[in-house]
Each structure stands twice: as C-alpha cells, then as structure tokens.
Image (tube, rainbow over all chains, first blue to last red; front, top):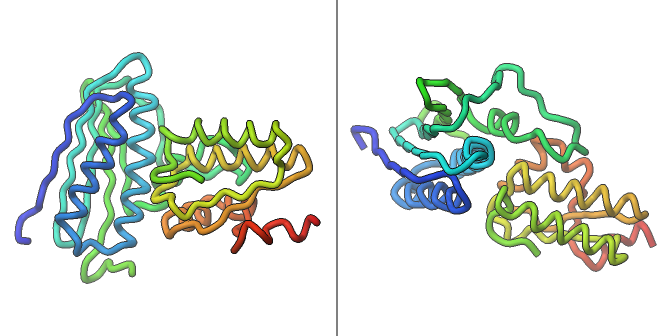
Length: 142
Length: 97
C-alpha cells in the first residue's frame, strides 16, 4: 500500500447510525487484515465511544448529518467523524476516569486512553472528532 | 446472556433486565460475556447498575468469559475491581454460601 486507503460513510444520527458506523469499520477490517489486533481493539473501542457520543448528543433534537472518514496508511489508522450537531463543550486535556462505581462519565476518558490521539474541533457549523492509532515497524503493540 | 455489541443501543435493555431480575429476588447474578464482541462505557454502566442493585439486596453480580476487548475496557476503567470474573456460574457464589 503506497498511498492511503480511504473509506467513507455518510449517514444521519439516529437509531441505525451506530450499526452503520460499526459496519463501515468492519468493512475496512476485511480489507486490512495487516492491522494488528491490539490496534483493532483500540480503534473499535474508541469508535464505539465517540460514535455513541455523537449519536446520543449531536442528534438530541433530531437527526443530523454524520460523516465518517477512515484512512489507513502503512503505519496509522485514522477515523474522522464530522457532524452538524451543536458545539460540544469538552476539554480533552482534562479527562479523568470516574470512580469504578460510577454509572456514567467514562466514555471520552476511555476513548482517550485506548487511542494514540483524540482531538475535537469545532469547524464552522460542524463538530470534528479525530481518532488515531499508530502501528507498523516502530509502533507494533502486539 | 448479552450478545454482539453491548453499547449505547443495548445498554438500556441490559440495565432493565438486570433490574427486573434483582426485583424478582435473583440477587446472585453472573453475566456471561462470552458472546459480547464489544462493550462500551454504556454497557459498563449497565453492569455497574446491576451490581449496585444486587449488592443493595445482599447479593452480588459477577462476570464470566470476557473477551479481549471487554477485559481491556474493564481493566482500564478499574471496573474489574467491582465486577469479579468467575470461571463458572456454578461455583461463582461459593464464597457466599
């Protein structure tokens, strides 16, 4: 693979959006069996958290357009979610996991813990979440 | 026994199911995660709710056969300190007998 391989999903937040997201990820896995299992677990976990967060919050007052861009290079896997929901007030540098007995509040901290990079930006009328896991010669995890 | 993805879409159902079991007097629960391919923070929240409900009635909730992803998530969040993993449902509560 000399140039990045890209996969795209365009959907609406709503009851079926999470299934769409996981299906897009599954389709990508079938094309990229070289990606180490640990990276696969990390990205699947991160995508579940961020995708779930978008579906739950961005579409709170009705379905909004959601785009998922997946990019695979020989050393990295990147997923970028773009949605047209309301801006999110979050400081990803100040995340901490709640007590083990907490019933809520783990999602972003968990995503941040499993991914190599997690960023959020408000761009115009869109939220943009970027999830990155590295692998390859200098980054093999398993 | 939950199957597939124990995520935002499924967590409320598991939460309700565990609550109903505890309310019906089944306070010693083992949740078999062997067919769960993914668990997220919502799923963890449902398990913790079930654990708290069982404990409040003098029982307990334990888990069995978590996969690699579930084990990682349980460990990273420290929820494994609450929800102990057992090898078999038959012997899960021998310590309470």
